Image (cartoon, rainbow, N blue to C red; front, side, top):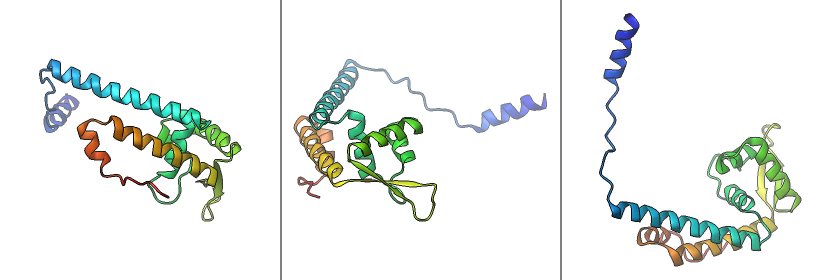
Length: 160
């Protein structure tokens, strides 16, 4: 009985969730459908652009994740796994393949021998820059007004 009282108290102390029972209108469904269509169209474009560069979409995303990593220090294999939502051992294989293609190098962490940092090679940088330019151009071309405002925050020129 004491447990039941404690359970009731903890439920009472928890704020009620806001109801999400807002009525959906046809315009809401149309907006969601259009948004998802734009996402799928962009992904198809990006995947085709990666293939033209001789990369799989996952390889392209890994290069972008390494280059765009925001954290203390350079990206690690674990960071790539988190970025791509894959398991660590899958990221190891992916990085192995990127290294074999000459796109990524592994650099030992001087402060911790267990850690390995990832760095794009010059070839990796060039491929990523080419793909990123194409992707930004496509986003600007096909963007909705809200996305257009967001994209305007990126500089027109993405020179390295």
